[in-house]
Length: 261
Image 1 (cartoon, one colour):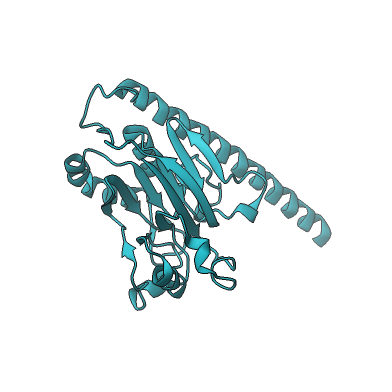
Image 2 (cartoon, rainbow, N blue to C red):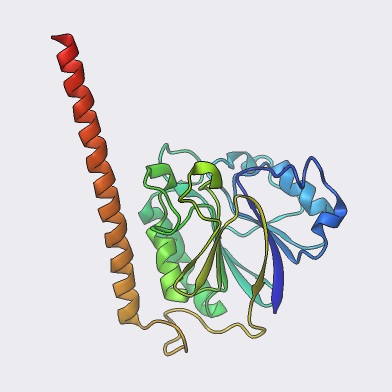
């Protein structure tokens, strides 16, 4: 089954809001928001779209508690099934100032653990939707933009077809990618707007740790090695970054001491 998806996040696109035409939504099968968008923007799209508008919360979406997007479906901590495609939602970002929809790695893992029974009943999932990136996959080294290890483990354990996220803006630097591939999963940064086609099997396969010997899925040993590899790589990169920052701080402090003498 081929689906055309409009993924949005972080910035309300003038293309759809300021310069809107109904024809711009023609051919879209599904709209998915990865967070940090005005609820009025999502409600506007839902008014004119003839397809579901799904969303997860971003770390700046505290206003949704009082003004939820009308005509839209929140899929946070849910598995939403559309045309047989299983879509798992896990919004929020890494905790950095104790604002709404911010979580520690441990808190995100607890959210995922609570979904284990649903995942078993649904025989896995095909699309992962989050606000934050996954650890080591298009994330940043600063705390607010670091990815969750729990999301990375979901990609390793379930091998979904697609992973959508936002939070890391494409204008942050040359290293931020719109698309990449992690193992068997297509990873897309939904910043502002992105329309793409994705092919999902008409009879989606069983995925995950509950279903052994699934063709094309890594075994438990391979999964464990991959988790160790990506975690080690990220920690080494961040340790080098922290060391460089400490060195710069010490140089600045030394210059200050000389100036004060």
